[in-house]
Image (cartoon, rainbow over all chains, first blue to last red; front, side, top):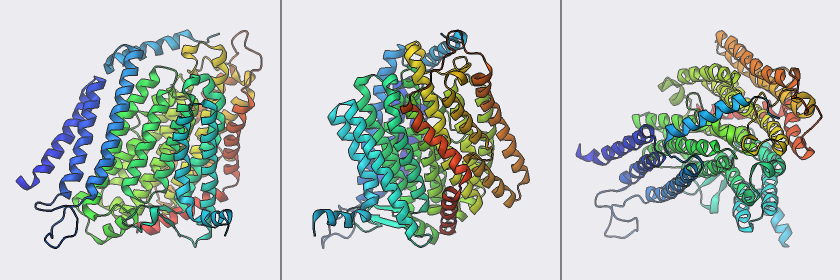
Length: 126
Length: 514
């Protein structure tokens, strides 16, 4: 149980994030869930790379146990991607709020359906 | 040795790097110049250069012995430590499709986005297009698992922006929805790659494959396979994970729809093939899990359900978007056979459907461009059946092009679509699944129904009063679109390029998968 602690936390965050994305209709809350989901993956990569008592991989006679630096480097890239995704998502939410006047998904769907009914009724347009 | 001599001696060896670097450089240049015309010139030039590079790589792969691979070490760091670019027959084939489509769509886009995107945003459109092209080419050429994720996100993030540039406000909602689903898909892919890295300790795909063969199949490896399958299936819009696609294709600017429909989902299919055959190998994918059965049934659902939904769409772009979901079903159906012929059919259809759908969306973009001048600006991007009544008289070349490409979607002999369906049926017969032959033919009938709806509206309905006069799209819009229409006909008659390379790629993959 205790040696799997980091995995349990990872899976818990993963499921929490994914659940928020699916269950919430508010566009901002969805993005929060997405961020939690993505963050859990950072943990999935970084935690196994750390060895208890391990140091940075700089060869020296007094150390024999080293942590793996590669996952950290990978996750730095993934963090940048996550920030870019979040920024773009928030920017889209702002634009949606300007265009629709709401950031609730069901209200947006309702407004879209009204437009579609209108488009069908107008028929052949001049 | 002079500089030019030195360059010409060195250039062929560095084509794999140039393939990605040239479009990558064009994007920031386009942003720095802040001018629609210059940005157009730079990104188009980069796309043409990328196309030329792809042809060069194609010829280089052809000179190797069958099954040969070009391996390029980024920064001269030897794999598996450094990042490796690998070009085999399949990668080179997909590079040609992606860069070729970009080289056709970009010249076309100038006349189209003039009517669909405000002029002050044109340079951003071209910058994003350049990035999207970079991402798609990068995914295809890289031999490094984490690199695939990074390039995937480069192409995805720029795609979200490109879709949000659509005129209709529904483009924003579609882009947001794609962002959520696309990010979930990409995160699933990273989780899968993470498991693989934990188990093998390498990120190089070729090295990973060797190490996976040496170890017993274990639960994390199967979990990696499952995560990668779901994540990539989201990106390639396998039914029922296609929810993001119809609205994204419908409300994006026409040039974006054409480019994405021809390339984005196809590159995702390529990633799936790459992981299945070049990394996991046949025994893991097709014997340990019931993956072929799942793939088979989802493909059949896509072929029937999505094509059936397409018949009842009132919006022409959405109709062909659902048709894309159905056609992707044919591609994944070929995968599920786990045979050389099935894989060949998948690879051929990936190419043939790409050019066919590209042609259709370019021609529909022509209709949008022509009617946008006169139509109400708020609804000018929606091409409904009511609006195309009698269009056959007003835009004869555009409509004729859509009909030819539509015949290719159905799979009529003489068009590219026939070739892919032929090989799909051969693969079904070879697997002794005779009922599948019936299913493939039956689902083609659904394509007949939706293509016929277009024919009926365009040729048999009277045009609205006062609009009988001829009003064809300009040559700048017609020529690139007809290049793709001509390609659908050409690859329906001369199959040496498509079938030859697909067969060689499939044999190479199946051999490496064993």
